[in-house]
Image 1: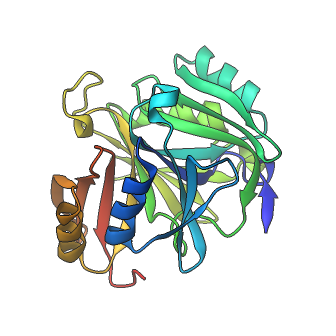
Image 2 (image 1 turned 90 degrees about the horizontal axis):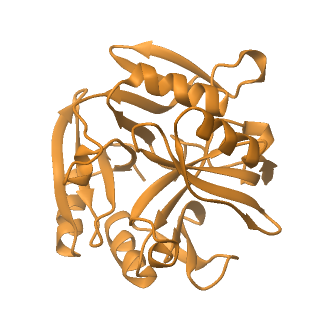
Length: 262
């Protein structure tokens, strides 16, 4: 079932990997996360990753064409892409690409917040069964930024978070984190930390990170390394374990060990 972005405006609505080599990316993520792939409607340079037949993310071999870095990008649903682009510019963000039309489905734009963290917006149809934290979708999204409170103000004004009865999402401040919830469930966390926009190591720059659940972190990490990936950081958290990895082209993502991972 497809909803319009206006129905979930402000919420994460999709995830996309911009890469250079589509087949290599499919081979890597298929091996590490068990995904299968089908051709997307946008053309041969795009595919949709699925898990047990449920869409997880999009992959597009357009990094060179669009002159953008290889990276995972979280997309947020919006009512009006032009209006959101204007709000981003007014608040000190930058526009990288778009809005670009993808008829008949919708319009998209890539942009960066004031600290340089890249994100996307989507105006158009969204999948009703894709929601962060549910099923095959990412477990959660995490913004690494210099000041989570300032970032929350930026995203709140741009995407309408916590905007009374019209908002899709609620924002709360918990243990030095800003937590974004949809229908009571956390979908994103904004964390303050020692980041630097011009850092030579990508994982030290302000950025949105995507978390995927795996049942066995050690096995999944070993598969990633075996298929050309590498470990960026690893850490203990909340009684569990996680590791931030790079795929063979350098895109960062995080694996969270979870016994209920499929």
